[in-house]
Image (cartoon, rainbow, N blue to C red; front, top):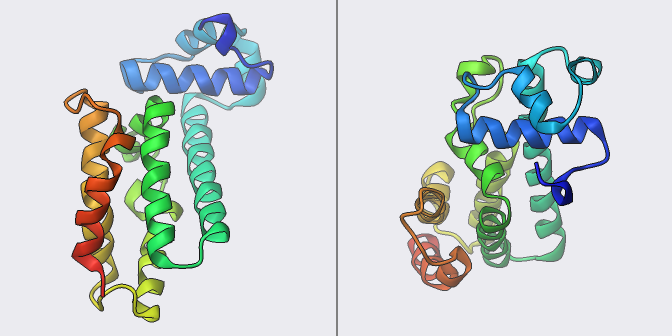
Length: 193
């Protein structure tokens, strides 16, 4: 890892290195020794903070989910309407993809249940539940047409998620924020009351 990207806290260094290696090589093709070498820490340091590689992956997954929950809560605190909240969330998802592609890739592409069998699937995780709740509240307020919240959430955020995947796969060459208005208009029209 380049020096400028190193984090002072060994635990954070391990998580940052694990994220990079898990997204580049895959969970099963990455060993604890690989993580230690990449993070520039000793094996003992890793086992001081984590029980095993699965514990590293679990901590990484939980940390990324917690960060997303914080972002959603901040959006909810700043915006009153469902429309404004959903727009801000879509904008945040696009920004995260551009600024932290490995985090987004780990969240969307890793088959978490293969190496974290007790983990909640990402689509059932708290951030996704919060997104559905945001849409459900929009129905109660009359901003979103009445329908199954899962369907409405998929209509509203599905196109954005697909663009995120296209960007991560390097199919979409333009930065996601440049696509925000176009995808937002289509997405909101699909659910607006």
